[in-house]
Image 1 (cartoon, rainbow, N blue to C red):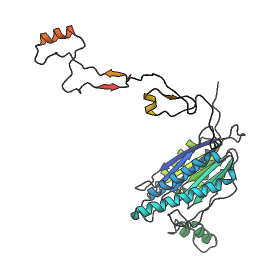
Image 2: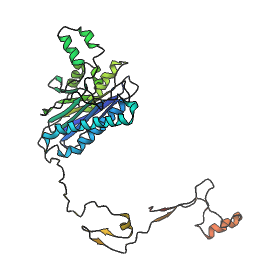
Image 3: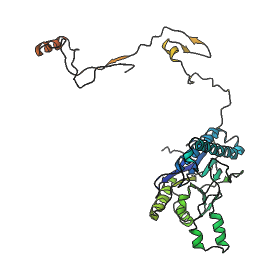
Image 4: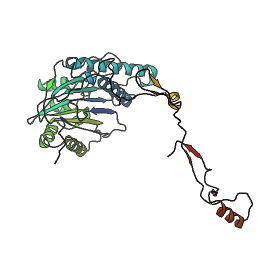
Length: 363
């Protein structure tokens, strides 16, 4: 029995609103079956600020469109992927600034960003804000990207004995961001020049900080227990764990789970089409002007045209009425019946029914 080849990446995404009134997270994943590369873009709108949902959508849309445009260059220009990620983040920040200038009432809106590009088993990322990027391997989970919030400093104070562990965990400034996309200068960004190499069986989780309502140990336990299951099932178990908390303050949560199924050699890499290249094929899709089509002129090769007397009359379809009708108004039924017998094409239309129409081009 024929079996479908296993894709290199097994990817699934999930999103939940939590206890918030609105959804301010945005996420997009693009891992086409048949390609050996993929893209993830996630943005977490700043909760409690003006138009946080708009900011996250602007960031995701701008970053993803830029990376998709450059995706054909990933293989031949892999060393430039960090520059692509940086340029995409800069463009997103500029778009946020332009939106704020056009809509002053949205001033203060902003969003975090985590964008990933995977080539075979190599992973590049750009991170701004506190949205975590987790990596699981052999029973251990770690956060790969920097946390641009006050949480690392508070945790450091706890380790130094300067702050009580309980007070540090519940510190009111814990979620204060030190870098974010606001349309202003971005204070910090995390974009390594060298890729992180994955191994077969590794699991990557890109998420907003809403997933951190679960303890890291709990997330690690779920990833370990279901490491041999599909990414969609892992997403389901993470969502179940969040719902089981029943935290009324649960933040919006969005995440993507990525598993590396295999690291076989690339059979046919995707490459950009050279500028000016024209395929020599008779099956090539062409554009014909409506005037030329109506007059029967079709392009053959280059600028050459063939003239013909080809006629393109519209196919007229008559919408037939329903009941027999008399030829003349006021005629008696007997006459109507005789008229019907005389000419079966004469039919009556119900008063409530629409008038008969002629449709050109119908079949």
